[in-house]
Length: 113
Length: 113
Image (spheres, each protein chain N blue to C red):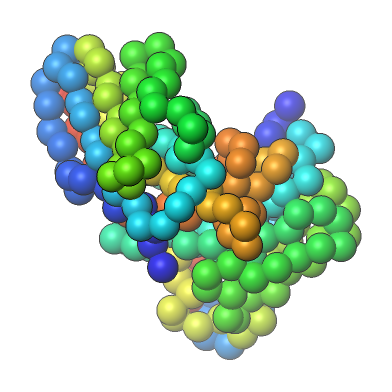
């Protein structure tokens, strides 16, 4: 069963604008990860945030995690046409699910030049 | 480093045929996994391995077999292909399972007629 659910399913913005994607999950986690997938390619890891962290930055990416609300957000600032891709959140569980990374269905981001 | 290499890139099978999807990684990762990606379903875990000789089932293991005789290789076998197995298959590896970033191959697009 899917653990993470991304919102919105699709997002279309203009180059230079910021893009925000959200992820909600249901059970306790060790960490939450964000991945990007360009059309026809494999997924590329963007950022990992652990359950005891609240915010993390990497270049133009900012990820927040609110474990009380079981939600995370990915912010891409000053977007570029090259950011056009699908973005997935994935949750790493604890205990028996320590080896299973569970993916959501993704957000399709289109950045128009 | 080549990273994670999957072969073939494309395959067409007839119902009932068997085949093996190959996956190799050159990063000395202990953890390897297979996902399938279907439209609107995100990625679903088929099987995973935490080291040579050790494999376990994921979310959707039926109809698939795996083995892990070396650290580098993790082949996925379709025993008797069915149209429901038409999908894009991704192999991924990491140091420690769900607590570290996954490195993905570029996928195998399989069609079963």
